[in-house]
Length: 269
Length: 193
Image 1: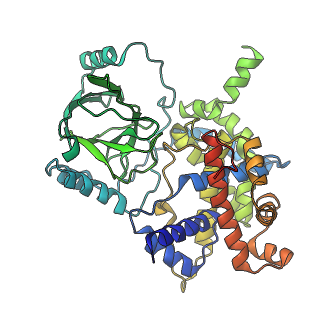
Image 2: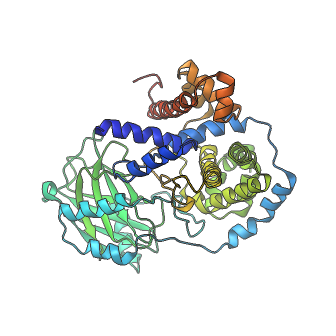
Image 3: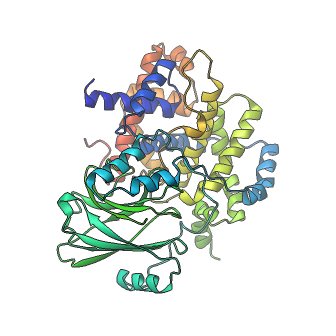
């Protein structure tokens, strides 16, 4: 089967999985195709189905059974006091082994390959609600904010970026604080990008959080940038960053990088 | 507090849940309980299982609210996503037979990550507009499935179409709709190629 045919077939099976109507043979096909790292679970497809449900079912005059409503309201204190549970599928030790290899494109590719070959993309149960969603307004320039972070963070991690073959002229550092959930990249000699065509995207590798790298935000480099200070915009709590990886992606970034253009890597251990 | 600011606060109920606001969780149950219940009912018949699924979906919501990003999806779509996952995982488990090739356990299903750079923030009118762009036969099947809640065999009986055609139209229709939503979200007309 040609690549496009395979991709189309997987997309159709993904739609079936989301609709819940795969038959046993299709399940076999889906399992086989999903082992291919290029075939990824499709959040947009799932959101489309959820948007349809929300559209059609919200308008219904539906009332929850009284008993269930009581149970739900009565159970809120249980939600609040529920013990966090974290399922770590890839152990930190194995990540450290991976990350101990050289800073070549191959090692980066190997890192991503492991991430994508892993079949389980299950949502990790978060530790509990916190205030990460609500971002405080930025009060100072990135450069000032970075300096402030460096001066006040007691757990500062600092690491050097190394560019891959095509980007070996670049240099940079990343600073990060787990406690403050704040970090900045300082990047020099990174080629300017055309935001309408490609954007840089940061990924944070945190094996304690997920086997996939966490999106650290997209950013642009303009021709006039000497050394650019880029704030890390992590929507999720990161507690054990092992590496920071910069890729070049489509405008707006991607959900899961195909690591077609890996630009640079900074390892923290 | 003014009505407008109260309204704005109400519209951010998930963000407040993400901050651990128990009162917001109560509002969330009141606001989205019927949606979660309706979605669960679409996939599961057993009443006690239904109640479990609704409770589990709200537990998921409490735990996952901090992953909600208003730029990615509306609150109801996000809640719908969590409810669908719970309900479909349950239905899939229930339908397993020993002679069939099993799917992975629900806990290891490869759901896409909720945190994402992709967006699909379609409001109600966008959904309606995109639906109207679908071929009429697809619209009809979507209406039977999503609006009237018919199962595939019920749609087969109602329309006389083969089961394979029903499945294909639903799946391709969903893919087509996703593409239209994506174009809408990027500011283009849904009918643009």
